[in-house]
Length: 248
Image 1 (cartoon, rainbow, N blue to C red):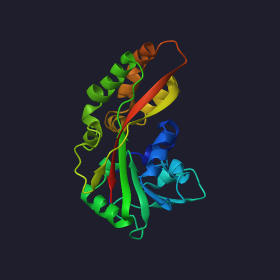
Image 2 (cartoon, rainbow, N blue to C red):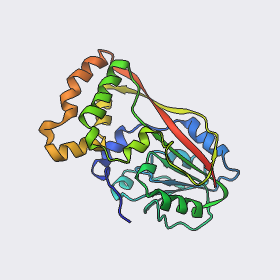
Image 3 (cartoon, one colour):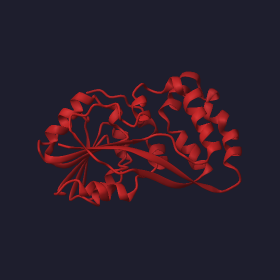
């Protein structure tokens, strides 16, 4: 099954600059299911959620269609990385206690994926999906990041990105929904790390591919971002997480 591969070419930068999910999220995930034999991380990328799941479950299977992303995943004793599609995982039926999708659901064929999730999960297992949007730093920096996102790159985002902007709330999921707490990611970043993160945006890569690096809108906005950042060496960066949980 084909998929939109927006990240293989930038897998090293993705592994370096994408933020990490909070420990509290995974502690909560563990409470959703009575058994902790197997967690499945679908659309795992380079394993941003996988490693934390491995500390909570006996075994984790990480499913990812991009071989380049998997090449940058951390080897972990109880993790099995598999190159496969979300809609056709190749897993046996009824074996997963928990199935998670972190910042990837919008790329899936949703009907096919939900059918596969129902097949893979044990009765009473849990499906949890989440995403995050733009970071929060300071009002001045945030305004410029939003300008880059919307004004300069708006036409270059895939239509699936709109599902992230609505926090996955517009997606109809054929499972019983569970109440879920709020979580956020946080990092202490230098200015160069912000620029590295913005450089992983798929819309930016599409813009450069079409117009060339001389027209790179990120480079053009960097001086203004630098002034807005100020003279402090680092700042706290936060990303609110939009999360939905379901019982199989």
